[in-house]
Length: 373
Image (cartoon, rainbow, N blue to C red; front, side, top):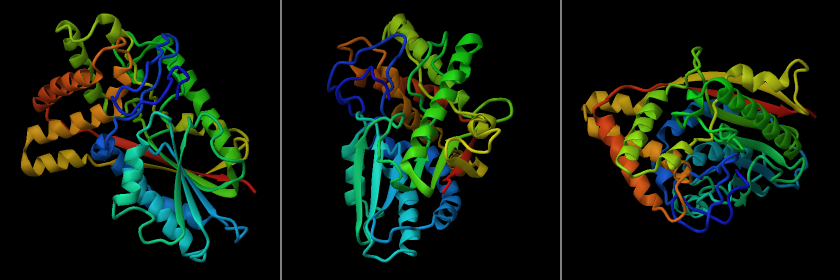
């Protein structure tokens, strides 16, 4: 999502040089080669909880121009595993209302550095793929940031985005002593709040153009508790300690560590809804549904049955590595082995988590937005 990246990168595989701008650090993709697909279980739980709302949203879309394809956009697709169920449900819901000869086109949108090879392997080989049993379903990919125009105006019937819009277009500041914006304070925290607000409005503005009148968009995002926590902070704090250990062990330099920032910022309900007040709309978008869901910690429930701390720690570590290690690795100096960094981070995090078998919790926020006719 940053202009500081040139060329294409898949996970940790080195494809080109990265221009690192201290004032605008680049944002990394999820780890490639299927790693994110295998590890994104927390995100999968949030997607599953949102499916009833998705079905209702699609049912409320008035279909027009029977000769035109129905267009679905998946903003922030990553490697595609967590898109199968929601996009498949949207397709089947549309298909109940449109003849089988009417084409349905699905656009998967993500950064140019995303692992689109893994995405298309999932779509073509997975028996649960959304097009397996549906005629006239076509898929395509768009390698662009969703902080810009990616599809034609008034072209999208239904848009979907899960756990993607929390990623910022740029990082406004470094975070003393940590890499997580929610652990920032004072002027640094304020800079992230301003960036998150500006990016949210920018994201909505582009989607308001791309959705057709009467179309719907559904977003699933992490929520914040009343105390301002997202629920995963203990995991991030332990990872922060591991990075400090790596500096002591000279696996990292202090300069590299200081520039590590995760460019994600979960927003409170009031922050998500702010652009729509006081007029009740933002550009042509209105909020049709807002819903919060407390997610059970599936990994912890499994641990309670089998009491295997190694399995619990491994799952938590793989989640962290696949989602966040590529971005942290971008702070490494040119020529440094990013795979070795990820392996060392994984090893240190797993060892610490084995000694810390505790539950984690998360709230997810689901929004359905409608473009006014």
